[in-house]
Amino acid sequence: MLKPQNMQVLQNQKIAQDTFELKLTGPQVQDMTEPGQFLHVMIGEGWEHVLRRPLSITDVEHHVVTVIYKIVGKGTRALTEKKQGDSIDVLGPRGNGFPYQTNEDQHILLVGGGVGVPPLFYLAKKLVAQGNKVTTVLGFQTSSAVFYEKEFQGLGDLFITTDDGSYGHKGLVTDVFERIEKPVDLYYTCGPKPMIKAVTNHLTIPGFMSLEERMGCGIGACFACVCEAADTKDEKGYRKVCQDGPVFPVEEVML
Image (cartoon, rainbow, N blue to C red; front, side, top):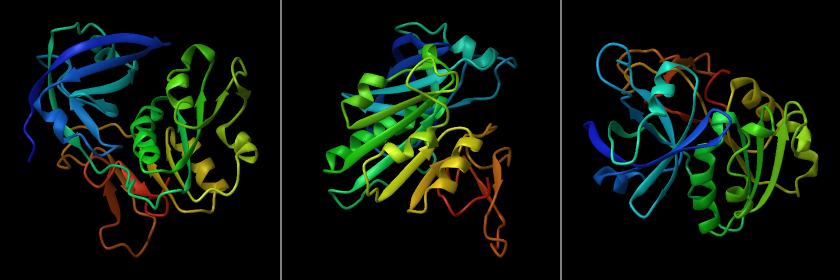
């Protein structure tokens, strides 16, 4: 079992509305080779922030891991106060990531929404390096929430949607599917469950989804992040997002 280790903060900066990019370094970066995994981060000491926060790995390069997080409560707000040179207690990498070893020269669709966008960037880099064509669709609430536009543009075709129409296409990520060059061989999606459900309902090709769930222990012991298996005859009947996921074939779990 992986043990918690301290990682050093290299950078912690705001990149969009309530959204921060955190860069860390440490010996465990060498193990972060699978896109879709997460780091379980200790925010502080004492009872106020006793539970770790799961943060998706956004990128790994030159012994540096990047994570992007959004302020959603006291814990993540406290994380914004970490400065260059500070140490953070990190457990990871955790979970099962995206199976990305595909046949080269495939057309692969990535669909992300909000804080579901970050893990898709590391995945996109891996897929492009294998010789695949990648098209990405990203959904945000408003223009001030958009991030990593240039980064994804450097890897292939990109479509952006916003709920209020202040940037890109106004509406849902599925609204732009008809504009995507066909055929598409495979897709990966990560974001809010309603978005993932809409994506899986629209697409009939093979796909994988990464689920966002609140986690307690992050190691499969507390059952805080359980979701229902789609197969009613499944012997176990459930999946633990932190241990069995967070990535699943789209047909494996109920949304």
